[in-house]
Amino acid sequence: MVALATVEMRPALAYRHGTDATRSLGSAANDTDAAPARDLWAMGTRQTFARNREIYAEGNSADRVFKVVSGAVRTFQLLEDGRRQVNAFYLQGEIFGLEASESYRFSAEAIVATQLVVVKRDVLRRHLLIQPELMGDLWRMTASELERAQRHFALLGRKNAVERVASFLIAMSERTHAGDDVELPMSRQDIADFLGLTIETVSRTMTLLEEQRLIELPSARHVVIRNRRPLEALDG
Image (cartoon, rainbow, N blue to C red):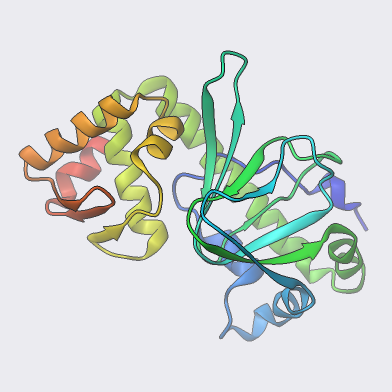
């Protein structure tokens, strides 16, 4: 049996195609193949975190793994110049907190009022020993995280502001399974810190996309995709 540390990875910059692997480990409640995973999370404890409440801090012992039951979570780190870099958003059914090292590399906070299932890391290790089928789920999840990280690096390195915002909106539409009517749990500042932009640039870009009739903005966090194909073309 491979030790847990060899299959854990840091929380990647979750951005696109974010649910398939994590749902296979923790949220396919009607899939009989997911029974071992359901047993794992049944052994966890439920905890509720208020908006902006810290879940764990960078450098804390990575002794727990989390699944989002409701709400949303951001992971981030503070840069040396005081700026915040948001590394990932985690939504309902998604899992975070897996680390290769003994401490968390990022801090995690609840974006809105959020309920989590918390499983201790040593419990996960024991389940891997007695239920090795979970290993395949972990591999798929970490591979998906790596793919999202690579896509996000490409976004930051190659895309302009309009393309970044378009990519983010398409990704959130897919991850929330909301179709063209997307309620964003995160603020414009969160989006800016995730996309490597200023909040002013994010707001101007949203307005530009609305003027081009690609989206509609009933409110700051409510986005309606009006013309998906050109928005997807910007996503590339």
